[in-house]
Image (cartoon, rainbow, N blue to C red):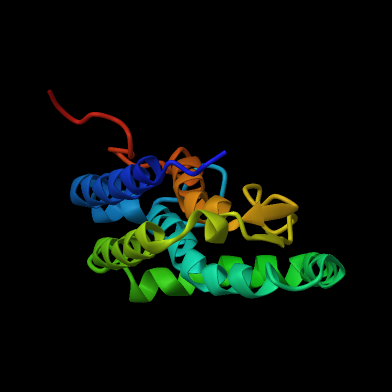
Amino acid sequence: MALDRDAVIAGYRRNCAELDTTLAGASPAALRRRSAGTRWSNEELLYHMVFGYIVVLALLPLVRIFGRLPLPVNRGFARLLNAGTGPFDVVNYWGSKAGARVFNRRRMAAKLRRVTAALERRLRRETEPGLARRMNFPSRWDPFFKESMTLADVYAYPVAHFDFHAAQLSLDATPGTSTGP
């Protein structure tokens, strides 16, 4: 099934707008409050949601490279990464805590806009055969990583990741909720 590029790009833009709205409406105290279902504060979780987009920029060349390698190499690499799930979880947790200090409430929306603009440009240039390129993934690293993912799946990933974590925010005004008429 072909990727609906316009739908993915619309998801990118919706996530940018939701982040802008959330940051504009959240008090500093609400951003410091612990999120629901994670050990991160709301601000740290928001950065983690942005980081999901940043990761895609690094994954795109990997899928292009590993998609050309023999399947046993692909599977072996995914198994090796899955074996490192414990250390990955530690880095993922502390990386989001540290990242939120650099790309805090004043900088993370601009970062997300830059990253989504870059992803949109790249997605528009992709060919159908390129989008079909496939790589095995460490499926234990993220609930949205499947055992095998195409480049199209990777482009769509950050929207699902962002939307999932948006439901874990414990702010006064959360993404996706209306704050007025």
